[in-house]
Length: 402
Image 1 (cartoon, one colour):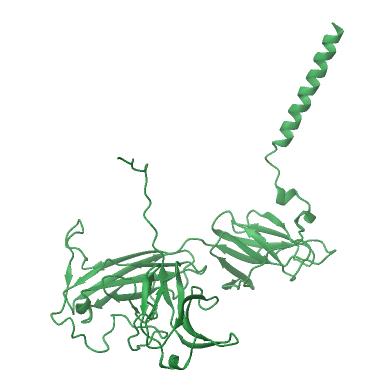
Image 2 (image 1 turned 90 degrees about the vertical axis):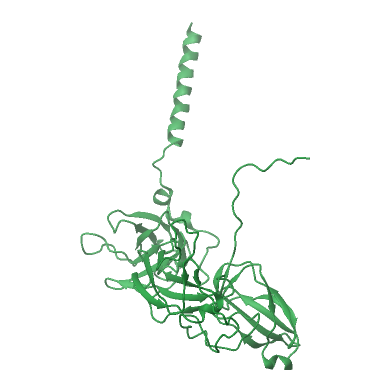
């Protein structure tokens, strides 16, 4: 009987210990960034940005405001670098204008940039706590040392044309415009961090918006408004015109919305296009009027990824060079990709539009010398490449039948 009692007592103690361990392991209130010691953030190497971010604006007394279009950003050490042996600087943040503060972590030894991962789009007030930093701030709410705005959403744009491009509610019967008709182009742009002066109105003559030049109307537009445009005579030769509104926010997110295709009554003399005819808008400074260059992208044009383009133009100076190649960039001349080799003056070269989706594309012709030096022969203005995605098919695959 005594043996049974001892056995039951030891069994109860074991159960209690096991239960206690489970409760301790499941403690959901533990916050690693807050409770971990500062030295836990030390690492053998750290990440740093390729290009140092610059403040977009300042508020208050010299408080810099940065913008990021991704959910992570780099916070530069206020002293340049975390010194060895010095107390580590902590990064605190608030997303409710300083009412509540949390710690994101500490700078590790010799770390120059702290990588901050944001959980949502918001204005992140950031304060540095540590040696050499302000201990308290004047006022009812501690002010930030910096502000980092995370904005991953592009501006929302709506465009409307009056008279309507359709004569019926089902949008099956197109309205036919004539040269000289006045139409009203209305727009509305919404974004909490809209970049001032970024809203532009553009026009394009032609039924398909790809591989066509867009003309830009001079001046920037307000967030909401309406503009009266006259259908140009040049639209009668193509039989269509289209309008586009473009906007950008301070984080660098860009949106562009096109109007439906506006059908224009064609001219009886389709081949009698007057010299110098241009779209309804005005080309920007980087897209001056130039002679026709088949296969060479015009500034402001739009290309579709994967299309085959026949280049039938090279500058006159190209006849004096050998080993010429055609290159393209999607990041405005930071890096280049070869599209065609052995391009010769007076012959045709076929190049494929790269599988990109970018609004900062250019092409160039360069000659490669015997020692590898490059000679620039021609370079295009900025144009766009749009990537076309296949439609998503929902449901099971069709059964194969014999």
